Amino acid sequence: MKNNLLTLCCFTALFGAALFLSCSEDDNVKLDEGSQIDQNDSTDDQIDGNTSDSVDTTANEAVVGEAFTRGAMLTNWADNIIIPSFEALVDNMDSLSFAANKFTETPNQENFINLKQSWLNAYLTWQTVAMFDIGKAEEITLRNFINVYPLDAQGMTTTLLAGDYDLTSVNRQDEQGFSALDYLLHGLGNSDEEIIAFYTDDTNGLKYKTFLTDIVDRMHSLTSIVLADWKESYRDEFIERDGNAATESVNSMVNDYIYYYEKFLRAGKVGIPAGVFSNSSLSDRVEARYRGDVSKELLIKSLISAQDFFNGVHFSQEDAGMSLKGWINHLEASGETNNIDSLINNQFGLIHLQLENLNSDLGQQVEADNIKMLETYDFLQKNVIFMKVDMLQLLDITVDYVDADGD
Image (spheres, one colour):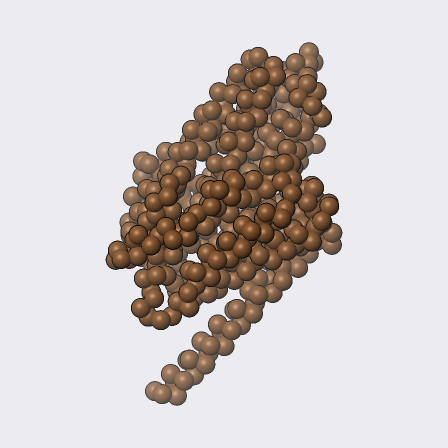
């Protein structure tokens, strides 16, 4: 019996060490630059704020004394984070739809400025829900239709002018969403006047107007479908599935959260433009490429949202409920946590400090001083290890996705 136990302990130690070393490897796998990312594949070639919003990492202390249960954590996630985030997004989509209709009816400077601001407001709010690829959002591949980039601007323009586009087609995912609006609002010309001229042109103006409103209507419809499903049925199902099996809500949500952080935040927003996965930097792969000067703002908002979720911070509030941090605190009595919650939160803090060194336009940052982008990637990568290896081992959650970049 003792020999069996000794063998088991040795195997466990060796497995843990191997997993840590695997996750510590640099993400230097070269990817096909021409491929398109899908949330269901393992390539990193194409992806789906301000610091004053940064979460107070002590916010969750208020619930440390509360008995931890998976159900309490799932309830906090659903009622105080996920559903309110989608409600805010749909509200912003309402405003975006109104602004788009007003501009297409009267394409003047004032309405154009309001439309661009509505786009940015909705884009920032999208960063708070992008990680929740579960339930109806996963079923309809929401993330792929809302925020795939880089945009296929040439393909989009061809179908726009031909008028034969099908926005429900998976082959058109890189011709719609926030990236398409980015191009339609910022990439058609060098000034507002030049861009507005596309919408007032006698030959093609109506086509541009129609495509613009069709894009917005599609985004509004998809996000509304996800919110309605959460409120009508999925919320209860999500909370009831509180077991510890791989397919239950906690394990699925935690895996989706880490996958988002690793693939869409770390790699998509920073690693791919910086050239981590290619032979050279790719400044045209940044998010909001055509607006440019909001790419860092979007990154910051997504980072804050990721940290807030870890700490259980309620959407747009300072209150916090049961969370991954709370779960780790709950396990402190076992002496096995090694302060993982502090390591993760401290690393989030270091990332925020690193972001202060970057240009507001990450594309310009890549071209002017890509070393700082590569350093930012390294800061982000450390939290992949803390969360994907240390935290998941502690919480006894198995990684349910396969990556292709060696970490």
